[in-house]
Every structure is written in structure tokens, then in C-alpha cells.
Amino acid sequence: MKTIIIRILILIIVLTCCNTFAQNDHFVQNGVIEFEKKSNMYALITKKIKGETDSYYQAAFESYKKNNPQFKTTKSILSFSKNKSLYKWDETNQSASNSWIADDAMANLKNVIATDLDTQTSITQKNVYDDLYLVKDSLRKIDWKITDETREIAGYECRRANAIVLDSVYVVAYYTIQIPFSGGPESFTGLPGTILGLAMPHENMTWFATKVTEIPVTDKDLAPPIKGKPTDNKGLNKILLDALKDWGKWAKKTLQAYSL
Image (cartoon, rainbow, N blue to C red; front, top):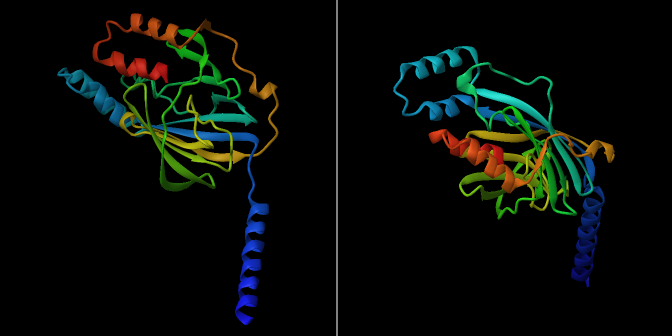
């Protein structure tokens, strides 16, 4: 009898604790996430000038290192509510360099992306050198492989997932189920929570959330961009292939950047 009573008491305690945790478990439905992107410019430039025999390239690289830090930092903001989001760059307090040798398409991305998870579509404003495009298309399908690895980002427990995009770009993402919006920085979606950390190890770049603010987000805040030459992903890819046909070894990386 005594044993039964003890078991009942233990069960009551366990159920009470579980109920308490459930009541305190809070899910963020709308708000703003601030991201910080870091590009390892020394590594990117080293790859860029690899194989170049002209000493001019090395001299330009040495000059760059004297006047610029190893990592270029840019900031962006993801506003979201329910199943819609708007991702854009924060134009204030951005690090910049006037050196031609640091001109890297992926490091300099400034996409504005409106995502609608209900319709599985996006509208992306892409600044491709001197031209502005408005790309309307379906969301990229990403075959994520979820792992058991976790880490904390911006105060949220995140789980790691890996994927290959654009045929050869290896991506590591960290998402949290505490923010159930299935999106993230740039055009990355498709995980059971919001991506707060993103890395492209072979491209020497990372995006990590620095702050999550739970605030009301209106339809006006999520209004998609409207300026730019209208096209879709296939159309933009053709334009880029035609423009980059004489770029040699730099063509592939530039194409990947503007296809991201």
C-alpha cells in the first residue's frame, strides 16, 4: 500500500512539472530578427587570385589587408508574421571597402525577399551590378538532413540541418522550433522552425541572428518589393549565363551568388 501511494505521488509530481513546462513554453508567432553576416574576405581574395602570376594581384591583396579587417560584416532584418516574411538589408552601419580586389558578388549581396509560405512563392529584388531585377518564382526545394547537434543562438536552442543547394554549395543551418515560421535569411526555407544560424563553410560566409524581438508585424511591414525588371529564376539564369560567358573561372561563383 505504501509503495502504491509513493508511486501515485511521484506521478502527480511528474504531471505537475510537465504541465508547468508546457505553460511556460512560449512560441513566437511574429516579430523581427536581426542578422549579422560575416564574410572572410582574406579567404575569398586568396581564392580569387589563386593561379594569378602577376605580382599586381598580390600587391593589391597586401594593401587590402593593411586597411581592412579579415571579416566583412553586414546586417540584415527578417520581419515575419504567420506564414509571410520580408528579408532586407539594414543600410546603416555597414562595413564597406572601395578596393576592386574585394569585389565579391556573394559577399556583397543585398537581396530584398518577400516570402509567402502559404503559396510557396517568393518575390526577390536582386541588384545585379547596374541592373535591378524583380524575380517572382516558387520557393526553392531543399533536401535538408536534420542532425542531433544543437547550439544556442540569440537565446534560442537550435538544431542543426545540412543541405546542398545550387548543385554544389554546402549549407549548414540552425533552426529553432520556438519560432514556428519556416523561413530564414536569404532564400532559405523548409525546416520545422526559423533558421537563426546559417553557414556556407566552403564559401567562407555565415549568417547568425543577434537579436529576436517579438512585436506586431503588419501587412505593410511585409509588403513585397515592386521595382525591377520582371523575370523568374529561369529567366534570370539565362541573362546571367549570357552576361558571364567571357568571365572564365569567376563566372561560376558569380552565377551562384546571384542565384542564391
